[in-house]
Image (cartoon, rainbow, N blue to C red):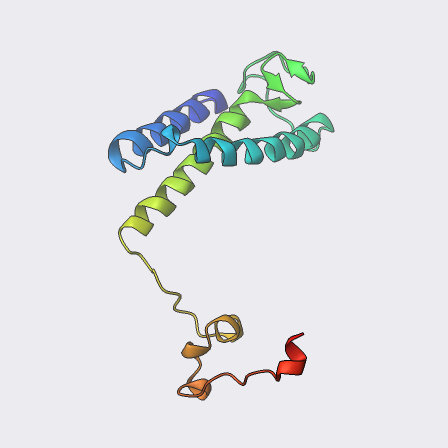
Length: 143
């Protein structure tokens, strides 16, 4: 299976899961497209830099195009193969779908960690502070 076929399969599966299986329907939300636009920009910068400098190379038989590395054209956008962009879209969509889907089902609504971070922001989780109020600052210190 070529990279093109894998990317198109991943894209189709992610869209199907979003619209029909999880029924999250992120593809119909403007907030998703705004967030994806931000991610897409940085994906182009990173992927374009890596492929444009030939840090990452692709077998021309596995992707669209002839194997040349133009900025735009020949199956590439900002040096990045369109397969990378499709696969990246599928990964982002599926990750956010699972996040929303699990969130709607109440998976870990409250943090369960009891480390320094949780004590700093959630003092009620720290047993040593249980039952005590936080000290108030003097009126002169509030200014």
